[in-house]
Amino acid sequence: MRPDDWHLTEDVDDFLARAGDFLHSRPALHNTPLTVTERLRTLGADAYGPEATIFGRLESGGWVGAIFYRLPTLRLSLTPLSPEQADTLAAHLAGLGHTLSGVTAEHDTATAFAEAWQRHTNAAPTLRQRLHLYRLGTLTPPEPRPEGRGRAVGEQDREQLIRLCGEFVDTVGEVPAVDTASWAGSRFADRHFTFWETPDGTPVSMAAVTSMVAGMVRVDPVYTPAHLRGRGYAGAVTVEVSRTALAAGATDVVLYTDPANPTSNALYQRIGYVPVTDFAAYDFSSTAPEAD
Image 1: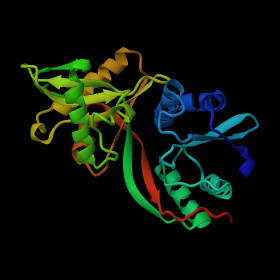
Image 2: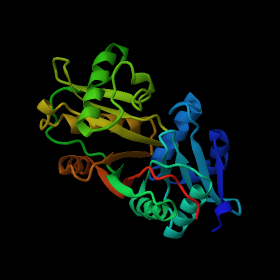
Image 3: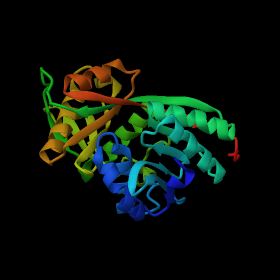
């Protein structure tokens, strides 16, 4: 593989014209680039910030074998690469003077790229996060089912929804914070939310899904306030949004979990989610890229 097999662009439509079939070929594995490109396509080039998102595709002989994108946060996201491909890409991006704050990818790819980036730039990688990717197999509602029902979140729920998303972000340590002022630019603003309500109409849990792309939707986030956990609400609301997605024609319903949370991993497997692969996210030290 040669460095010039990687083709870079800032035009999402041009990128999708060449790489769209590749992304659609494995919707579950490619769920994040599918949702990112769809948001940029529908909301505009500044959907993730004023700086340009950079896209790259590995193409040879008219065949696309991998892609990457770098958001304005300077975090690189990759589809699976061999160690040799990861090294060639790291050398290519460093040689072009690109700055990266980190990388997120399937575990082995992320690790290979992080090591290659350090070799070519001296920027030390630090493992920030590991994730399990699950895909829905046979949906199996939990028994016993908690009392109540699922309800689509409407405009009248906006204040409560923003508060719950803010609590979720605080709980998992995600940045930036979410509040009324930042809501429109947050990753939650274009999600489709559902509340699980008790019989008296009190929301006790929430879940959301992304818009469908290539038959795929991703469940994210799922959140129950701490004092209401252990009552089956998270499982019930996840089943509700999963069933709704299937009824709408989704062929791939996916979600990510934290491997360090055995409760959520066991829950999703009980209701029918099957492991696909592991992902990893590395942060890079601020050393400026240097070409070899």
